[in-house]
Image 1 (cartoon, helix red, strand yellow):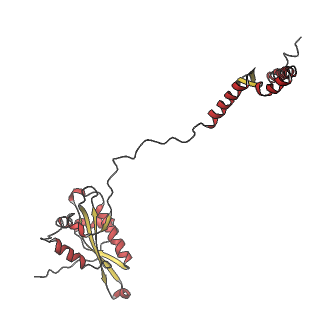
Image 2 (cartoon, one colour; image 1 turned 180 degrees about the horizontal axis):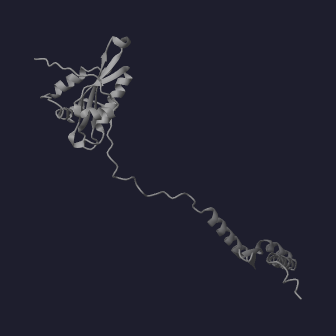
Image 3 (cartoon, one colour; image 1 turned 45 degrees about the vertical axis):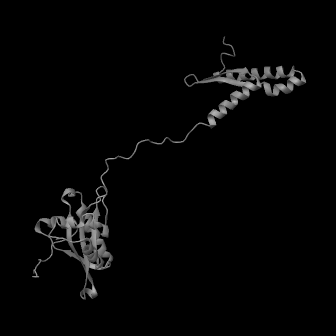
Length: 248
């Protein structure tokens, strides 16, 4: 014959122990003097020292003890403080961007200081330049209308030397209802930095300038070996160049 206690579930047995402890606490308070009763409201409480949940058996058991008000307040305060002050901010990665990133080159209009930065030296890799003083360099720049003529350059950010350049100018016409045509010339990239698409950068800058000036087309002349490069830039083979050299 089985006892009624053995037929109880683990949860029922836990509830019975909890009720028994509460009855003992009430009886203890009733036997105290008025002064002790007032103090007991602060000094007596039920503290759960350990809670263990056995998921397999489905049992929960608690051990209870009476503690003084000072120790209870301290323990509660400690638990609340340790919970509320936990630093939940995300960690900041200490990794830094890769230092091996490729150098960035930007196309821009020519400046007077580009005389010292080797613009003319770069042009000499393309054709004959001659001996041009700084005074003559600045004089020529002043003669160029910024609305119809632009020299595009790329400066190496490390050496501060001009490493790529191209020129675009706008021809005003009567055909196509007083249309305009862009002409690109003097395209050159320093031999030491070729293969980094700097030629594409200066060509695109020239095309953009011609577009902004309302040109209906942009044309250029090139050698046979450079045809594929300009085709990659969007140009198509058209007609044949004819040339006449003037004598001076």
